Image 1: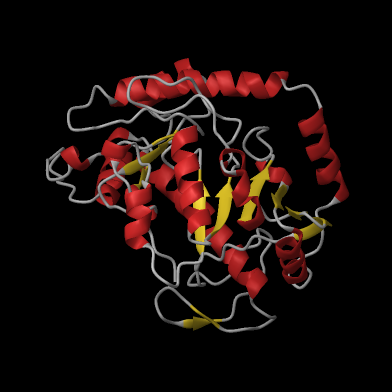
Image 2: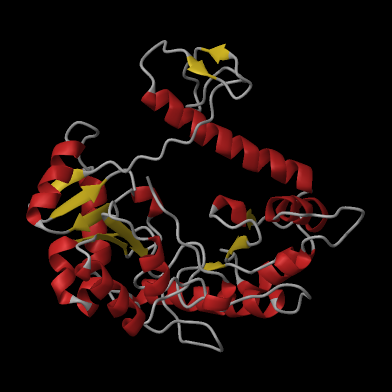
Length: 339
């Protein structure tokens, strides 16, 4: 049973050893550590990372460290964090025997579609992961493996250009959001997200609508401002909204913030269609042929494959199934085709 430990904007969304200790019980066995963080963009300092690692070692707690954004860090500005992401095994070498590092090429090299990642840890733990993987999926395809090797070993010029562009957009979106009364915006030190605290906007009215949660606020922003954000409920506390840094150029993002090329309703349909397609595809993959599943409305339906990979039934189940599919790479690492 996972125990979630939250830190607010006043802590730059970084939990402390004191919070972790307060949440620890005799059954606590694993800590999931993410720095830089999705969705906050927070980066733990070397000292903070060391303190958490030493705490885990002291209590015999395993660490799963997600380092997928390790190379996407930016100079520290204001009260934000940034600079360099310190690996927890670098900060606490004694933790190596009880730590699994998770990483991949998706973020640094913009290779999300290649679906290549890996985990590194003690050989016995990796062997168990490999045994599990062997019953779940096939190996990473050869082309994707070659592409990942080329990205890791080749020139890093384009990756640095990506990072510079992300930094420009980070500074722009933080500056613009900070102009809004009621919005608190810790400056993210890594990744490519901004996670503003919007508690000061809740309970206020715009255009006859008074949002009381970040989900309602996100809906209002989409309807009236034609800007898509992710509500904080998706990540925990209901008084925040996660905003992904735009992938367009800085100048075009500034313009599109004021006037979107599409109306809110078409945008809503596109977002919903993409979500339904992905969820339906996952359900189909998980169900045996002809297996009846429970729909969102409580009705039973038998999904069938369509050209898009979606269920042909309009009421097909949309339960999100997220499974990391591992493939043996060596005695100390596993590659994931389903990152």
